[in-house]
Image 1: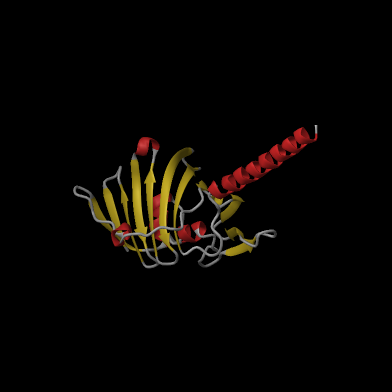
Image 2: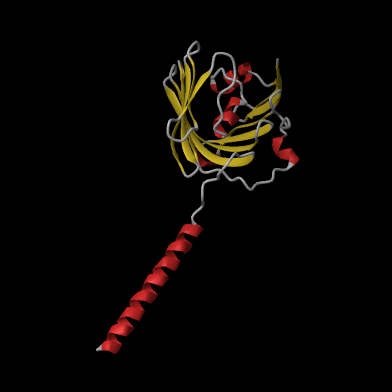
Length: 217
């Protein structure tokens, strides 16, 4: 009887060790959220964009590739991978292609450029600040930090009635809601890929053959 008890005890100990090992392996296999400031990143995102004036909405995928405060590229696709737009920009310059219109825009990075693309009068670089969890920059903007996590939680421009809110953060994922008088965007971010190396041509757009070039002043 004692031998049987010792065997059972040994078996239970072995099972406990096995379960612990499996538990540690499972934890190790799960992707962890990046810690600390991010300087280079790539995000897979989805956005629901609503034109409140026309009562229309469109769901798109947006791939974001960015070097913090320097360069960013956004590739926008709709259902079945249909190309909608590509955009590259720096703090001073912007170029973007609207594929359905066969138009290539280039010029100064400004609020006017962003207003033409999605009807939102903010500087295009603010899209990267949103991705990097940084305050919106520009005249008239005020921002708040979250009480529990200390991260940016809301930015608002009362004069223009524009609001940006960061919500539902978990393991690097987040939801950003942008609202304006005639515009609403719900932007869902997956956890960023931070171990990425971009080629120089990533942040360059050329006028496609047969597309009309339009300079932005």
